[in-house]
Length: 453
Ligand code: GAP
Image (tube, protein in one colour):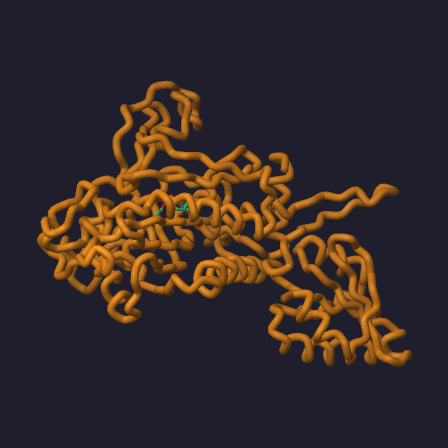
């Protein structure tokens, strides 16, 4: 996709109701977006596909949904208070502030090369809880969903009797006060993450890191991303986050080049170790903060070794918003139909498509056709296949065009033949091939269930 097409994609997202600038009517708020009627469906479908693959289709993963506002001590002992920062520079001329590693020695606003020395800028968003405003009331909006998985580790183990290896999955909002949010929903200040913390025996971490890398690449392919547009990048030691022993980025070919879509990190025993009291009882590999506040040991019984161990953690962590952008970029196609005609078609995989079936009346002002459309809508919306829309624009060409643009896999047209001939039938038009077939309405439920299975 070219940069001009990226602009067209952004415009389509607004026009068709996928993504809006937050606080739009007041001029927006940088780095924040709202998801419209189609955006929320697509996002929910991406989250459902992740949850299905990570939780339902495995038998070694449990789920969690923890609070966003986080006790300051959690983010103190996790290392975020001290080290979760990006290098920031100021332009001495125009006073703009930028991420030092995102610019090329020159101010992107005014071109000046007079910049301050880089200094760390902590990305966490602070808030306060309760009516008294003082340092004791400080809490944070979580910068990653992972920490609550670590702090709830013992409760989950006690509740489920899990043994190693096993994982805890969570999807939810995270917040980062990014210095320079950019590239639409790629780098924003409020976003959703889907994270799995997979706990393994110390020593088995490298094997599991490899397994998860392969697993995650396959998942992206299953969401419609071509292999050629995916790349693996093993981070260099000086690029690693403060907690990681190793991290592999899965990169996608965005319009501005390959960029990170997901990280698969080996966090070893850093987090569970940091949040554990009496750390000296364990043979920790990571360098941990001594902990004076934790009330528990985040360990698990290793029956083979007959001892308590602090597991190592492999963490596949993806951004839902970034994933959605990749899926939209990948799906966007401009097709030349010949004779000066063209169409924009979003070839979104059918399990992700915001609307599954659009019911289109051949004529809007035919009460009989409209009645049949309503009857079919009532029937199909109960099938459990997802959202079924009823189009009543009255112009079949426009309806097809609109549903091509928003990625609806099937348009179902009710015409005069539907009313006049037995057995009763409708046409189904395929978004990608534009081919039409006739299906008896009695067979529709089975046909559609099978199609969207
Ligand atoms: N728990 C590990 C962690 O948070 P990360 O590499 O900082 O690791 C993981 O973030 C993923 O979250 C990234 O690969 C990206 O998809 C997404 N992400 C991170 N910061 C983001 C931002 N500012 N806007 C959108 N997505 C972001």
